[in-house]
Length: 267
Length: 196
Image (cartoon, rainbow over all chains, first blue to last red):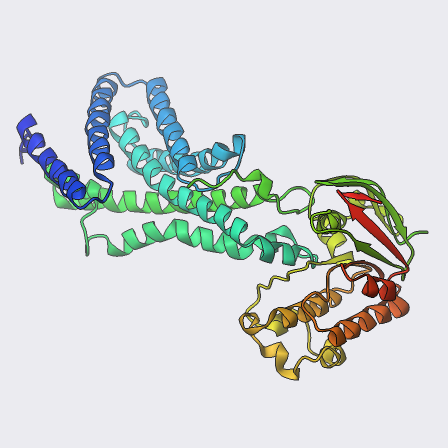
């Protein structure tokens, strides 16, 4: 089956929809028109640039370049995790917790899938490695950001309850346990919901893309299941690492709650 | 040997503070709002970082783990927070039947949800919850602020009993100088974080 090639005119028509949305938002004074337009322009520019980079990478398969691209993706995701938290940790841990959690989860799970499941030749074939790592990082980023935000906000708002427990000789682990549970649940709910609704409520993006590109639905489904499982485990491990490291940083070696390690709230 | 002692204790906005309590002693602590009374108690309970030395039975704070220290040096904040959905999850009914009655609380209080408690009930129950850990030192931050005068006297009596029978040392923060005269052998006045 041949793919129907999209022309610049086709994309311009799609862009008209976004512009229409911005106009309606402005008319209703929702104060999001500018954000919609900026985000739309960013989507187009960023994806076009990525397309160019991928073209070069696909024609010159080189592990160092692929590692560099993965590093850039991880760095941007790390920054995004930090900016999505109302009160993150101060200093190097502010981005360190998110970055480390994503490195330990999305990187490792992608390597696992490339080396043991998909097994392309070479194993770092950018046609597989880059999209898989991109999807892993994007989803893990959301889970990690949600979990870290919930941990810091929970500790801030429940300071009295945490210190009441510490004052009775409870350990920091015991005192923060309910907040950690809640944070882990918050981070994992999006992917659990996505897995539960996959195929019934919506066709996941990657599968839709493959079908539109002319691949047989059966193959598209198999890849989608693989990706869903990878995303679930990557997000899960990322959230677990983030809550463990994040909660740990809220206490010092004397098991004292250290809210001074959180930065001031963003409005 | 002193039961509880500080040497050059300096915490945020407080200090240096030096004092020494024998077993069963009670020191009163007073001063204007914002003079650092609560911050001093928090440092003694090792809830806030601080410098200088604090000793319990001659053992430096650093040699005892944080949780162990806080179970031995019990801190009752002015406003008590709760976390369990039922009062009875915090301490056993059997161990405190007498005290619950003395403090004017109903016998079914152990089945209550903390949400329904008044501030006075919370304060009395938080006090009993702290006693249930059997601390050797009590750091009481205005423990009768939400109680009427009669109930305040009952709480004073329970503390005196613990001092006499178990040798518990006490630091009692209050704005009520009459109360401090009744409960404390010595009263320290804190001003701008320093003892006058």
